[in-house]
Length: 154
Image (cartoon, rainbow, N blue to C red):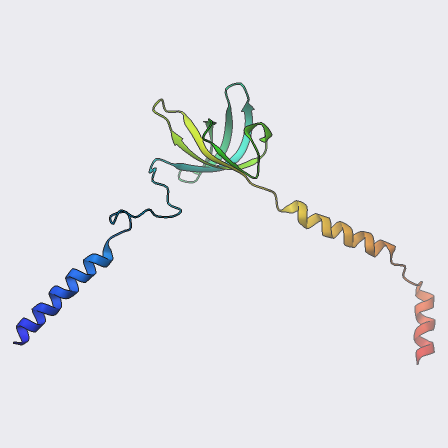
């Protein structure tokens, strides 16, 4: 009797764990935020040059495995999306980009998404300049007045 009960519990456990172990793709449900294209690669780097005629840019990036800087020529097409920049024409040399790209059949890299990395140093400088301007307008009394004010208070 105990053996049968144990077998039933094990069979029930195995059958329910298989149901819960299925991924949403196996169940035919779409997964939000996951790209179905396994060939998408990513690079982050600095734009060295731009060729508007061929719609390509040369990206200098750090290859972490080889621990050296490398160059990658990346093209854009009509399906390329942009973040923090409206179009390819607004990208300039020395801009820092994050690029999701695929390799076409001919071996050329084609950007799927280009994101311009905004520098965080510009907003931090503005408040410092404003504070310095406020402090420069504050007049401090000469040292002799401070001494006389302190002795008068005592």
